[in-house]
Every structure is written in structure tokens, then in C-alpha cells.
Picture 1 (cartoon, rainbow, N blue to C red):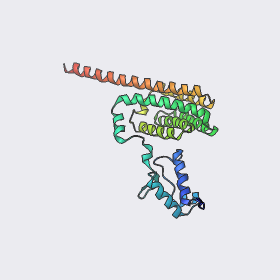
Picture 2 (cartoon, rainbow, N blue to C red):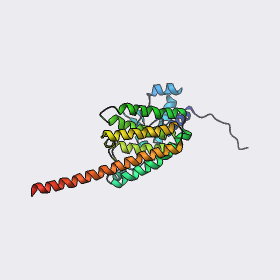
Picture 3 (cartoon, rainbow, N blue to C red):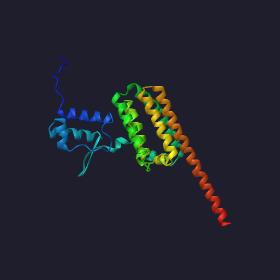
Picture 4 (cartoon, rainbow, N blue to C red):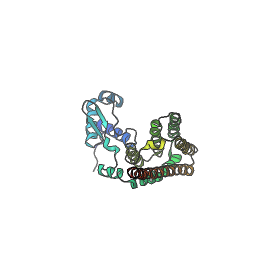
Amino acid sequence: MPFEKIKADKLSSAVVRQIELLILRGILRPGERLPSERELAERLGVSRPSLRDAIATLQDRGLLATKAGSGIFISEALGSAFPEALVDLFARHDEAVFDYIAFRRDMEGLAADRATRLGSDTDLQVIAAVLAKMEAAHQKRNPAEEAQLDAEFHLAIIEASHNVVMLHMMRAMFRMLREGVFYNRQIMFKQRTTRDDLLEQHRAINEAIQERDGQKARAAVEEHLSYVETSLSDKQKADRNERIAQQRLAYESSS
């Protein structure tokens, strides 16, 4: 008969599966440092040899990376969805900026809708908590913190949508935004009027999600990103006009 005795999984296999799921679900993030071997073994309730076997397997799969003298980290490569050559190409062409915004408008509208249906009460509390931090940061003259929280707010909505493929894709997109591949995010927060508008838009998104109104949430996200698109387009036109004006001034000065 084609039967064999069932064997319990090795402890190291259970460790591998737990860490894999934490990475897949976005709980452990690219570049994040794991606890020390001793602490991690204690938390997981396994021996250090079993833990070492699991870490070796995860390293072979490209999920973990060791840095000499620093410890073990979630692989940075997991935070990149595009090859370096394509990222460089995005950075050198304005066309990519507006395609990026259009992509975000579609994906985040869907994520907001999903969050109203699939997000737990705790997920929605996280979104509201990030908005509260944004409101506190809004009072500061330096917009850097508010700009960072803007990204965290949008990612919290994507996390609440509970789609791991969307989560990892959008994290990679926001990583490129943080690195200035598409545009300098802080430009959007330099003007007080613009900052006020952006905060009100985020409040509208949060309100719709807290009400679990998917249609309203999607519309609020789309309105917000259309505003971002228009603002960036206006900024590009203003910069171009200024360059032309400087050329005219230089010509007049040399005549």
C-alpha cells in the first residue's frame, strides 16, 4: 500500500514558515534587523542549532542577508520591484511621473475600497492614528515629518486592504518616491496652502474609510491624487517658464 508514516516537520521548517509569512504579510520589512540569535531562539522556543538551520534556508532563498558585525536583516532586495536600469530610466523622464500618479490613483482607489470591506477595526484604528500624527506634524514649519507621514498613511490603507501582492508592489513604489525617483515629495508640502489642502484630503479619505463607505473612499483617493497630479504639472510649467525668463534676462543684460 502506498502509505508512509507521517513525520513531524523539523523545528527549523516551522521557523522558516513563520518568518516567511511575516515577510509575505509585510510585518517584517526590507532592511529590518532581526533580534539576536539568542533572543530570537527564545522568542520562537527553539534551539539555536534549529534557528541556524532556518536562517541558512532563508538566506539561500534570498529572504535574509547577513551583515558582518551587524546581524541578520530582511533582504533589501525585497523592497525593489524594478531593475536598477529601469529605475534610472524612470528618474530621467517626466512621462514616468504622471504614469506613476495614474498608477497610484487606480491602485490606491482600489485599496481604499478594499480596506472599507476587508480591513479589521484595528486596521482602521492604525489609519486614524497615522492621520492624527499628520495633524500634529502639520503645525510644524518644517514639512519633512508630515511628508513622511503622508507615505505612512497611504501604506496603512494598502495594508488594510489585505492583498499581499498589492502591498509589496506599492511599498516598492513608495520606496522609489522616498528616494526621489519620481519627484521630491517635500515640494508638495512647501506651501502652507497646499499643506492645508493635502491635510483636508487625507481627512476626507480617513472619514470615508472609517464609515466603511467604499465608493466614497475610492473617490476621495482619486480626488487627492488628481490634485497631486495638477500641482506637479503646474510646478513643472512654472519651472519651465522661469528658465525661459532667465534666458531672456541674460540676453537683455548682455545686449
